[in-house]
Image 1 (tube, rainbow, N blue to C red):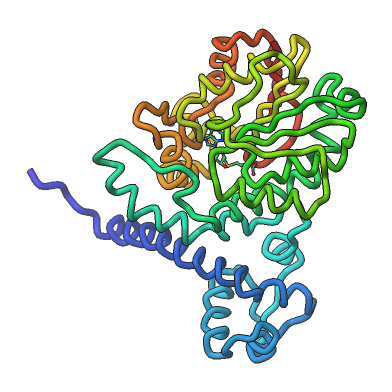
Image 2 (cartoon, helix red, strand yellow; image 1 turned 45 degrees about the horizontal axis):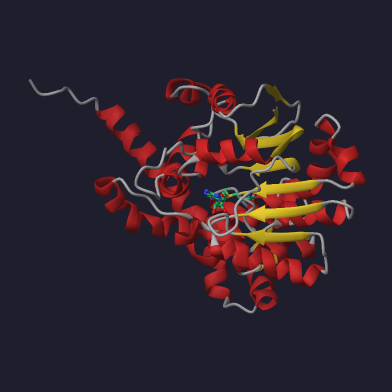
Length: 358
Ligand SMILES: C[S@@+](CC[C@H](N)C(=O)[O-])C[C@H]1O[C@@H](n2cnc3c(N)ncnc32)[C@H](O)[C@@H]1O
């Protein structure tokens, strides 16, 4: 028996399908707006600009800028004034062009070409089961991750997140030993190292591109209380000598997160603290689909990046972007020997924050 096709639903479905392609193509245009400095110039101008002015200020060709501006205005990313000029709303100026603002949103767009290029190699992963680590996204992948997380951290890590942890700021002021596991390009390490000069900070990551970037930034910072390592060469100390361990948005990316959590437990002093920051996730796909308006984005990024990383070793656990719910994190922490697990009252659009203690 053949299914009855409703012609109106057929049109609606096709429309919905092509809105996804519209989003993907416009996302590519947003990448260009960021990389070519078009948004930055529009923000700095603070008034509507013609495409001739925009092209001159970015050293680009007007005809190309005009077509780009038409896409951006049609997508309601920038404002068209009906006289050939375009501008940014105050909100767009922040999200698109203010690197210092916690709501700056260009990080994921920075790494869009690398993320989408993963389509070429994950096709094979669907057959082999084996994914690809963060270095498969090249050096710009590490920069994109850095630009995704650094603005929020710069605004909130020291004044809001660290004070939410019991006794941690006092230890950091006095002189503590701290590790940041999955540190990426080292932004949080360098920020904390400059804020707390009496403490020492060690960042660990398996991405060589991220480590190279972290070490370059460390060299130019002049800081002497930070260092970066690949944990496969030099792992966390197993002697209970650390006061604080941080993990920012990375446990769900790890092939063997339980082993890493056990290593964190072994590295901490009995009164130490693990600051666990990870994606807000619920226990089941159904809950995530119902309650998370970004669920489809998250599951897609998982295939292209997070779960792929978490399956980049043959026996990887493969948690993926929405794989570390609070309950799962509690269970894994308890299995590693942690006895205290508290969700922190920190407001973030995407992340949850936990204080986990021996
Ligand atoms: C989404 S990024 C977050 C980076 C950084 N924490 C930040 O907030 O900018 C996840 C990082 O986890 C790293 N990673 C994955 N598995 C790891 C492991 N087993 N040990 C250390 N780092 C790992 C990746 O290389 C990547 O740099």
